[in-house]
Length: 213
Image (cartoon, rainbow, N blue to C red; front, side, top):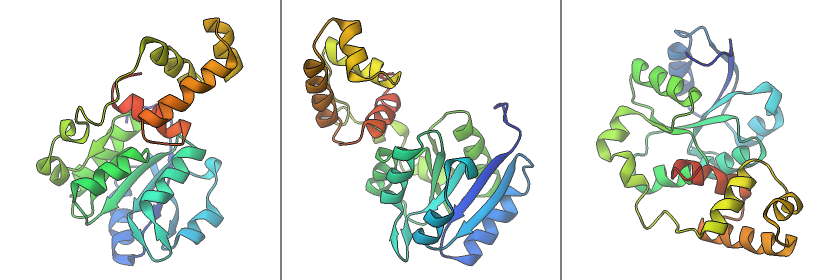
């Protein structure tokens, strides 16, 4: 892997023991990946989870006590640098899009072969949005980002979006653009509305997926 980190701490969240064992067998082929936890329930994962303990989460869509799509959004909102890859038997376009809209770094079918899985993980670590081969065959990445999905932004909104992505606060943005903090907050609210989210981290992740940042 091209990233300079030596070991990536991986957690598998899936309620099927055979699936977990299968992924463990695949991941042991790459010495840079170390499994630090396996959980079949959301509450057990949340009790364990901390940013320091996890680099990458392999996350099932359907769990006995929760929804993987919602959990993905929670993880990415709190810790946007953690890589979240969906693992599922579901290949519906709407499900894939929902996961990516929640900030997931990719979507893998459980039937993917070892080479495909390891390749996708490597690409995700390198910053790519990844799909396992079978999902790619259903539709290409362009289908996930139709023109209707990509909002039109004004010049000012683009400026504010870029500064928000840099981690600037409203007051800092106001000073740098010579506008009032209230104007910044108004533009920020408009951006959230245009990206169909109430979460700034998800907004920024979407903007990156759309090539706006």
